Image (cartoon, rainbow, N blue to C red; front, side):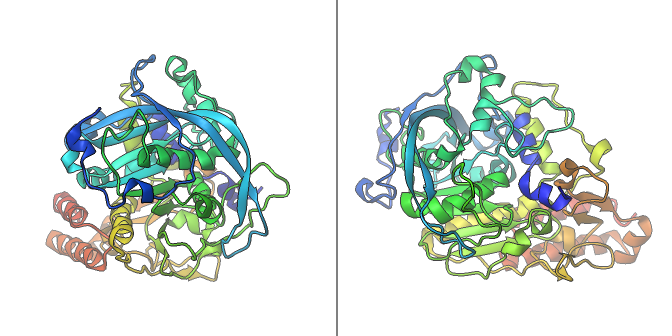
Length: 502
């Protein structure tokens, strides 16, 4: 099997790494909601039984916990809950084509018991009414929360609530499936990692994962005796998934959402050319290339890195923007990057203070591009789109050379796409494409290749010239709607402290 097909089939690693390291208050109940309970979406989705907060176990913390310093900085509470019930599987109900209109119908049901991790403002008055529900990634054979890792500064800084859902079997029970092993790291699914805490969990298989994900949202919209949000009343619930979870999200949007109608918007982050399987059937109804359907009322924002274009096949699935689908392709980014690992290590220290993850010897210097900064702007733009109908800015695509590769400037950085200080005031080549000779694991992390002294001097005759270039590039990105001012300011601060052009 060639590298391209391998990367399409085995999506994320870093995402994986993230996990590895990984009351009746009247004032809260009275918080306003945009939608009366009877009119909230998802009335036909089954209501699961929720228990918790979960405590105990060998480690005394959830798997992939929020780093303590992060929770303390933003004054957030993290709790874990179990949810259980009967989940429905789905099957195709007609031909699935390029347009993403994938008809589906309910099939059989099976009992399940899974978990969700809830992070919410400790002060209920700081809750902004929006919940981000992430389909936890399992490509490494365990749960990880990459979208929270990238965006937590925006999520927590703006008062969102966050819920991570263990929707797939491998994260609970273990096994193979679509996965990439992490070199030098022993992968453990929930029941193996802490059987005392998670031994009662049961997952009937990924055919039921879509309805499990719907029922997680139902537990937030129509809480029973146990309320995972502890009295907070969400007005907006946005679904998110990265890599393999993004492929699941594509199938959810195209096939399941028209039936469930329980989410208000979707972030599809780093998917390949199509969606994931809806059931264990042969032949599969999922086409090799598929768009996101445009006939829905709920907005979809696709976020694409350099790696995704050809390594995962997204280039073949490009589609024009519409009133309900927007795509952001971001230059200088990789499918996973150094910040993925950094967040994973911080998360893992909650239960293993010796956690160290350094792949520089195996992969070289990993991508240090602007993925997190632009993704933080993306989730805010998506929320504005859902809440008040403000369309996110249209983004230029990354330029392509000859239909088979990313077009690059003389120094090696990508042309086109969303621009930021790392690409428009560069000090290195930032790529997300596979490096010849590297493993599949390394290919997902891209590369950072610093400029030599002569190149830096030719670009920036003085340190002030470099800082001015970074400031201008940051302001351009803010004005274009692709970067938040605090992130632009951070780039300037880093530039002021950098020894450039020396």
